[in-house]
Each structure stands twice: as C-alpha cells, then as structure tokens.
Length: 130
Image 1 (spheres, rainbow, N blue to C red):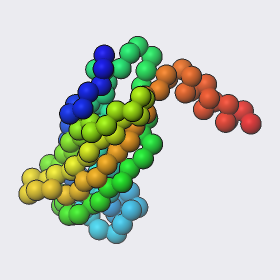
Image 2 (image 1 turned 135 degrees about the vertical axis):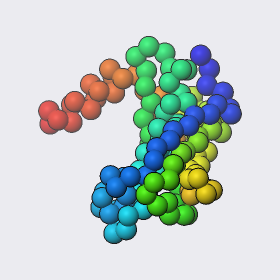
Image 3 (image 1 turned 30 degrees about the vertical axis):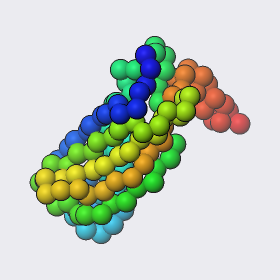
C-alpha cells in the first residue's frame, strides 16, 4: 500500500499521577509531562502507518521538533493527532498536534522511517556484541 499525504492517526490518554512531570522526572509539578506528550504524538504517527506497512515492516521515530505550550492538570483527557505532510521514499514527515479538553497544548513536526524489522534488529544486536 502507498502512504499518502493527509493520512491521519490519533492517540489519547487521561492525565494521571503516573504521567506527570514530577513522576517522570522532567519537572517538579503534577501536570502532564512533555515526554508523555511526545509519546502520544509518536504513537499517533506510528498508528497511522500500521495499516500501510508490509509484513515484516515497522517504523521508527528519528526526529521531533515540537513545543509544549500549555499545562494539563491531572484528570483531563489528552490526545495527539498526526498527519502525513511529506513522503520521501522510506522517510515520512508528520504534522503533530496535542490537545486537552480545554484546547491545544502543543505541536510541531515528527519524522519517521519505514524499516525492515529483522534487518533493523540484527544491526542493533551487533552493538551489544561489540
């Protein structure tokens, strides 16, 4: 299948004590942590690609350029949306945006590459052997 411009994905969660900045160590306050927002963005992009991958393929995130613009307290739902904006062979570029129930909380761009999982893992395993 061909990955086309405009392809979209979404991922959501609720802010809990476990995904706050103070719990993960990225800050000292009990609000939704930037690393978890990034994970939501990557998951939205990854999820969008899954139906278009061939057997044995996967994708890996390689670049993010995002801002986290608004804090979200415990108890609110948060979600990320990803949309394909460019396809350059195995390189896929996404626009990513995150929201909570009150409005936008962050956004930017995300780059992923399509990989052959076995080949990728073989290459990675060689690092452990050295």
